Every structure is written in structure tokens, then in C-alpha cells.
Image (cartoon, rainbow, N blue to C red; front, top):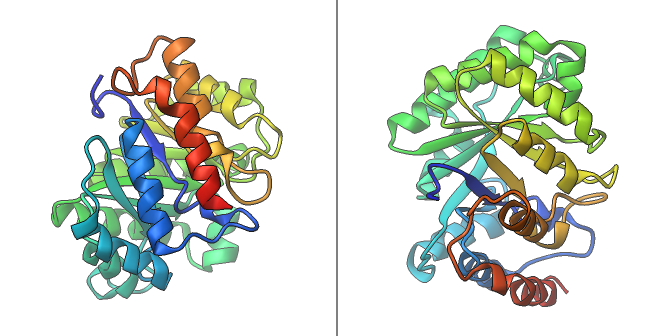
Length: 283
């Protein structure tokens, strides 16, 4: 199975680094990326260039120091700011400067957050998504879109979440990721929403689950059963609050329980070693 069929996307170096007590040096981040590549993950999100100096340095060093066999490196960042031309947005330029083949954007998909956090209109938020995706795709990047607080927003206004996804797909985004940012979902609810969204959208869907209910892995697997083909997780479930879906548990379950060969042959036996090695670096 190639990365075009099913994506295992690891965000240990970005979302996982938000765990209390974890502070990777740039050398640590490079070491973690090499370890994740050894188990065959398809994508490694390295951080937020332009927002964090350490992440900017990581991407600069990665260009010459990282020789990945399986994974593609991903830079993370937000869409352009409201009222700013995408060509003039410094944070968007920092994403290009990171030099990665893939960029993962985060966008608001909850009506309340658009109005209260971004303090802009629903239409402007859609334009922010479309403009940024099209700009980055036009510069030769593969683009994934993380829809922040998707499930909470979908409960309040399902139509708007779908509009955000469709704006991204129309502009060239490869994946629209449904994020349970609060970690409050249960598997039945995740499966129901994913099935509904699949019926209403045209593009490839992904899932990103926080673990506040203790269901992040189960929720992710429920999303796969409902049709997503891109899963996000972190090593050992690291992350803020209760953490994220555990990349290692996801790989093990996807391969052995669901029959999906999401990593190359021989990589499954390396999960425990890599888990322990990353735990040592995190400490």
C-alpha cells in the first residue's frame, strides 16, 4: 500500500511536543524524525516554521541532515490572516521557506470560532482557506487541511464544516482532516459524522483525535471503518492535556486487526523499540 492509498501521519514533533514537560532540542527533533521514518510512517509533521524559532531551525537543518527513506516531512501553519493578501502573509511565506514537499494548514470550521476567535465573517474564512491552499499548491506543495474543532462545529452547523472542506478541495487540497480538538467524541459519534461528511464531500478525508475521553485510538479506528484514509497520531500518544491517538497503537491495529498494510513489511516489529527510544528523548 502506497502513501497515496492510506496515510499514516505523525505529529509527535508538533502536537506531541505540547505535552507538559516535553521540550525537544533541534537535535532531538531530528532524532525523533529518523526513528519515525524507521517504522515506515508516511508523513512526519516537524513543527510550525515562522512561529517557533526552534522549528524554523529544525526545517533548515532537515534539508541537509535528514535522509528519509519512507516519510515525507510536513510543515504546519495557519491560513492567511483575515484581510491580508496571501502573497503578503509572512507566516504563509515561512511555510514555503521551510522547503517541505507537504504543508498541513489549520483552519477554523466552527462558526462560533470564526466569529469570536478570528473575528471575521464566515465568507472571509472560506476565502482564507481557498486562497492559502491555492497559493501553496501553485508553488508545488501538497496541502492537507486540519479542520480545527470540526466535530463541535458540525454539531452546531454541519453545513459550514462541509463548506470549509469543499473550499479546500476546490482549491487543490489533497486531504481534509476532521479534528476532535476537544477530545470529547465517542466512536459511534465519530463514525456517524464521518459517514455523513463522506456523503456530502468530494475529497479524501482524514481524522485527528485527542484523548480526553480515553477514546482517541478507538475514535480513529471508527473513522477508518467509516471511510477515512488518513490518520494522525503521536508517538506514545503524547500531546497536550490527555494526549493524542497513539501512532504505534494505530499502526498495530490497522495492520493486525483491520488488515491494512499501512507500513512496509518488517516495520511492525520495530514499534516497541522506537516507542522506547522516543520516550527516552522526550525525557
